[in-house]
Image (cartoon, rainbow over all chains, first blue to last red; front, top):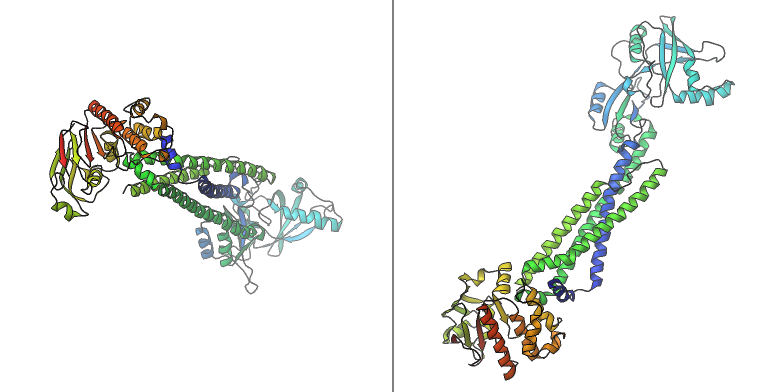
Length: 395
Length: 215
């Protein structure tokens, strides 16, 4: 009953029009900031989420920029140490190259080919092929090989048609024995190579590390510690603009494709950050408008409030009453905004699914937490504004 | 609850008040629980000023007013509200009703501001006694002064109190209505063992006053 009477006394102050304006402002601001939070979550999910991880994308083959004036463009120990310290680098693997002449040819005349060749080796953990055949025992003349898929494509779509040769499948290639001849002191030393896998990651002819180590020692023309010209790095985020910048600053390059997106990423980063800033600014603004609205209501019914206090209404009663007038609207607005963001997220998930990208169907708990925090802030703003202006009116 | 007025002098026109002889200004005055006090105050003697000070409407005075030994200046906020809800009721000279509320709503407000002393029906009994039943649903702003004054009187009587402060409460009423109002006030005060402080321009015989002062 008391509330009804208070409502009748205090309502006359401010029209519904102003209230709707303040409420609208708050709704828009809250929508913006909740969306900003959700966008940030989606963004992170798209970049780093388990479902979006691509095993190829996280390994990059990096080499020093080729400077025509130098005979060798290698990475020194300092280069490597410095690189390993970078936060975006998880692991660095050195690509060791062969230091001897080797050639490959087919054993039969059905697929006549001959080529001078080279080998490289890298620690197993960097290779994207798992095979039980990928091992070499000292003394064995059979050497497992891993070649790039690109080579097979080159053969199938370039070499074979031009030479009128049959095209080969992966399994066919893996059954072919390849004759390898290492030239040492003028004499050929024969090995048999067997392709055991195809890599999409490293564009090289890979042999097991222990074999190459032995072969370099035994047949190699240059001795001593070999500096790597190429390395494989494992990174959690190849599109990271910082990685690209570091490589550029240190005269290193990598497959351009995988880092091209860093440019786009920079732009998206900026947009996502901008949405944060916009949301926060708008929220501040909305808070200001709402507290001004409260102030206006109290000020325009100053006389009535004074009289209420005179006949014995406690400041506490007035505060509770005013909170009841303003807070429910805030709560409703918060829930409405959450609902809108939830619906948008649902639609977004469906949209992304078509593109084979994955985001959560429901709003993230962070968004929920943000909404609750904002509600608490609103509560505090309401409470302190009311308290302050009732106190002022009391005087 | 005892009221003590200790050497109170309003700051504006301080000279005027300290020079004049008065029973209340600049004196030590004490009202004991349940006493019916009349203060005779011709025009210009500061009657409304005193009432305002007593009810903590004005703070520009020297000296102290004490309610049950606590200086009124130290009673604030929720404590002051509690005092006004349960211990001290008031009838203002300028009435001060909520113009947009009806007569019933004005009275009802005081009834429900705290734990009700009377149930809702009591209002109708009282309005009958004073003859204003016909304006119960009328906006207070359009009632006549006489009707408004009776509404103000009833508003003061529906709440619990130990003291009733009245500033010229019958100024707009004719003799018949004045007598009815006085009878009702006496009845309500007796019921609560309450005292009152009534100020008016002249002496009168409306109540068996415990003490009379000249302001």
